Length: 452
Image (cartoon, rainbow, N blue to C red; front, side, top):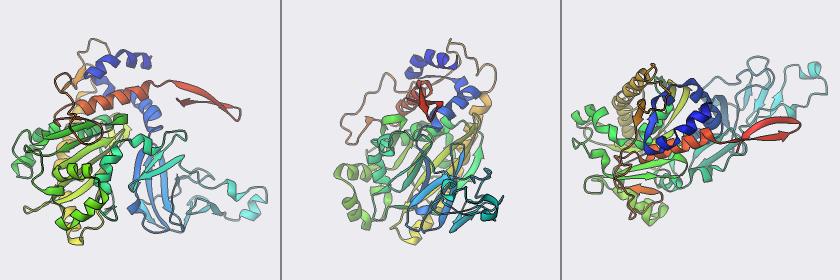
């Protein structure tokens, strides 16, 4: 029944009409978990968080707690954070350094390769029949990385991360691979819970510079951003594969006042070595990169600071759904490893003032996301009839904006960031995943369904 309802709204969805009940419906949320979050690549960490052998971090991969560890050979591995003896969560710390992880329940111990290496009174209790090699930690089905970004996937048959990211890699090369040594995470990720639907938060970063002048009016009044109401519109909105997208914001002149986002001039030979001509052209003109990787990874490369001085940084953020009306927000601060320590510290302090749980811009956004939830849970907003009186609007640029064929980067680029093209692309891909047919697979005598 639910699939039939979704199929009936397909045409209107593509035209920019999004039924409001899709934001708060428990059945939709359950379907999203099964069809999207259990089958797509989800961002887990950056390699710089695991600097030395024995370093570990614990994260969530959809609903599964996982532990990532660097072994003695320098390899990063990820496992379900659950002891295979009785299923207890093995590690409750967020991060640390250990050669061995011991379950607090019965004392089974595992090394950084996930191998079972110790059982309390094992020889006396289990005899010779139980083989330790068969009772190691369960590895995450797929673990791959790009430019230091580590992604996991619960579907062992999923396409490669390289294929999934597609042309987004071209833009990630600018943000993550421009300087020698790449990027590094500073501090630990900020985490908090907010009242919001994950689709709206993902879309806010990936597709919606239009909100900046209204939602973040306080930043304008404080002089942190320009007073021009079209400030965040200048540049290009670029639609990419698989629901991904990026906004390349410049200025009214088509370029930034600060070449290469204000990074030190001494870094320019480094940029020229690591990037191609077209990437350098885009990077030299950009003020902000802001966008997203479907389903729930967002990024913002911008400048922030205090006392009139601004410093570049890159933030990654994940919107992990906890329900149709609640999310956990995780935010990583990243910066070029090659930058001087003084620059890094000033950039980090500027970031804290604007983003993070107590940041001025952060509070602006979370207030509006909560208002969407509050207005989407009643009878009128959850009307599932097909008269389209209960829709929200994604029609900006639908029939009056054509691609800019002169844009030099990959993807379909539109000559303004005030448009809903990425949002409609996200909704289209969301719909494709939710309505994808299933096939029956037989393995070892057991039947189970697997997404085509």
